[in-house]
Length: 451
Ligand SMILES: C=Cc1c2[nH]c(c1C)Cc1[nH]c(c(CCC(=O)O)c1C)Cc1[nH]c(c(C)c1CCC(=O)O)Cc1[nH]c(c(C)c1C=C)C2
Ligand SMILES: C[C@H]1O[C@@H](n2cnc3c(N)ncnc32)[C@H](O)[C@@H]1O
Ligand code: SF4
Image 1 (cartoon, rainbow, N blue to C red):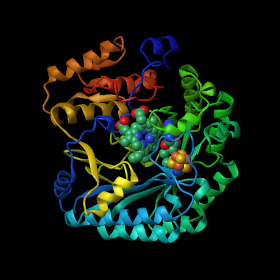
Image 2: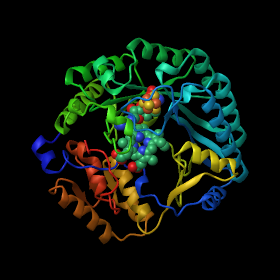
Image 3: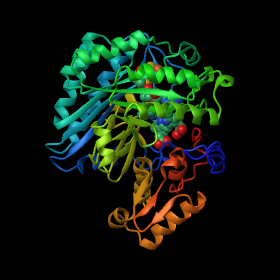
Image 4: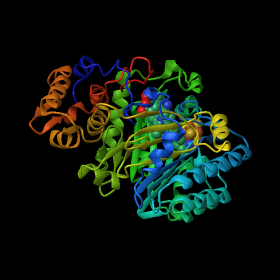
């Protein structure tokens, strides 16, 4: 890795940048995408084609203070039951417009806490999905699991519904860190959850942990990583804690005086990163790790790694349909986002309309810039030949972009006939480098820190 002085000079410690799970990023979405346009985009999916599906379940029994996801607390199952009826109605709308023979390459249930669903609800929702589209051969179905909210009956119902990967939320195992982020979760509870999903026959395991939490230290994150490694997860996401109390008001509960500063964050990230590499994991993009042979690792090796709203994926389907409050869909022509508030979402679906409120129609250089950013985020390089053959851009224009990025990083990015390459030692700067290819105004979006 570059030394701190260099990283600091290049702006790592004071920049605020998007995570580029899309381009343009969601804060840039506007009102140009309505239900009518969404219907046209859905009807344009080729017959017999593949899509991936995201279902958002915005409920949790507890509301962790650190969490920036769209979710609301509920003590009982009744709001969840009412919400599921709406989700099924939205699935029925999709079925009405989806061309014939479309199958699912991937399905992800996220949230929130999808495991708040009872086994009956799981069967019911999975059945409703199968009436819209069957799984394609080799399809993957992943579900976000809160270790505190899973039992054998749910794990078995999910497995019977075709679930292939569990994604468990760990965040940190240290009790003092957990106390400061409003999330208590013993190692034993997490261990039991892992055993439950494995016993149910769910083969693949992902786990999420965070660096940059209050009271984290090198010793503590080392212990968290070692405990996590004892589960031998296939994949790990190591996200930087995004402190954005202006977006997620519950983060006002986080003791800011105990938060590590930017240099300490870099150190925590690097400490955890080295432990995963020592254990044989490969780093995937900016914040994921995967065992050799895992789908993400293969995708990275073969140039097929892609960015999506969940982070990184090896899915190649050209369409992602997101259902549920706040969910985002991606089509070849643009993005569509559902109403974020559950009440507005439910009202629109009850009125028989797709609950779209915002989005973005690709125009001008959007698609080319989206690919430049995705390539930097996934591969740490941009293949000039690929861009020139896929987009309406001249060699002169493209290389002018590369050279301008290189100049902004003191000439340390490598520009050659092959394209642009980010040296491994500059990996912490990847989001900052990606920003260089972003043509939108980021000043109002209120993004989190670059490290
Ligand atoms: C799976 C991981 C994460 C999800 N949200 C976050 C993580 C790490 C945290 C996060 N996401 C966004 C922000 C705001 C500012 C920023 O730093 O960019 C933070 C702190 C962006 C964001 N979150 C959602 C949307 C629509 C956006 C804008 C996307 C963009 O900038 O490209 C909502 C959202 N995030 C997550 C889910 C599941 C979700 C709901 C649909 C995951
Ligand atoms: C879905 C995953 O998103 C991550 N997550 C939730 N909130 C935040 C945040 N503020 N910053 C970074 N990551 C977050 C958690 O690791 C969770 O498991
Ligand atoms: S981290 Fe998971 S359980 Fe906690 S509030 Fe966020 S979505 Fe809910």
